[in-house]
Length: 238
Image (cartoon, rainbow, N blue to C red; front, side, top):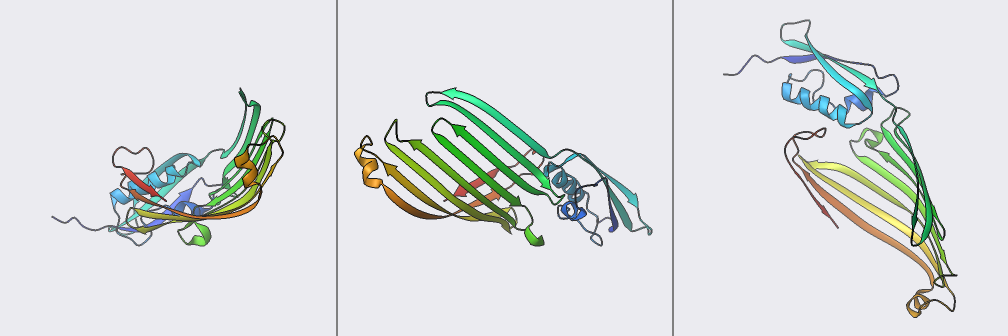
């Protein structure tokens, strides 16, 4: 038999000293005025944990001002969201060094920033990327990155190449459990050779401008995003 309906009278959020409240509310499956649903409430807690910007997330459910209402209080504990990574290695191509700096909650907006630099004896590569999971409150993610790479093997193999460009992409939910992520990237590339280069490289010498279009389709049937216990994901990329 159908149980008596309860409604969400109020939602309180405490502990978010840095993170904006809108970042948390955008991940809730229920809102003030909606019928109270324990499954959606549990999924809301899981969505907040999946942001990976809080150390702990707890929810407390209390009786509202009327018998048919509930008050939900979320208590979160923030954690450091910045990371610094450095590494070095030795291979047949010589020694290499890598460094990256990232922030997963820039200005408390849930925006991810990442910059990286890789150095070796004949290659330099740098990249900077920004990902906004809810651009302009549209429920659509926006990703932008800029990268540059220079490979100098004039002495060893007779060629030198440089490649600089950017990429732009978005991701959104089209239907229930069905996500689409289109993207575009453009690059300017220059290839120089000398007399010691192989013939195939000499024929390719010059300047190039490439633009690529792509997309991915994700079908997500996981029961929850944080610590999934059942379900599956299928992804098609072209």
